[in-house]
Structure formats: structure tokens, C-alpha cells
Length: 49
Image (tube, rainbow, N blue to C red; front, side):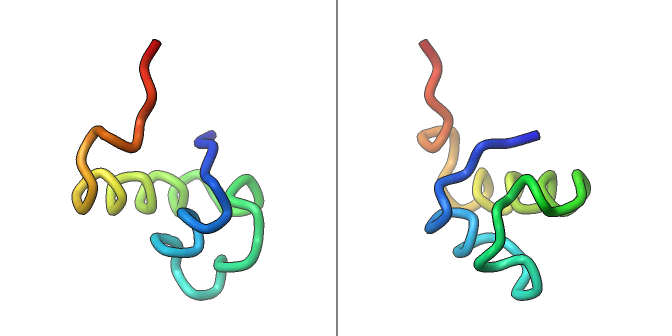
């Protein structure tokens, strides 16, 4: 669902999903990680063209 750099994913994903590609996590886990990233970093992490 979301595309994360591995280092970014590892910083926001639950420990059981760290070190694995974000795409291998359930959508609900990806959603929670994206929300955590947004809450801590704001919209700057999303590139809009």
C-alpha cells in the first residue's frame, strides 16, 4: 500500500515487522506506521509532484 525506505519503515514499524519489506506487513500495520510517521514528521515525508 505505502512505499517506505527500509530505514524509515524500520523506524516506525512494530518490532516484529522491522527488517522486512513494508509490503509484507498487513495493510492495517502499514496504515498505523504511516500515521506514526505523519504524527512525528508531518507531511514532509510525502512527496507531491
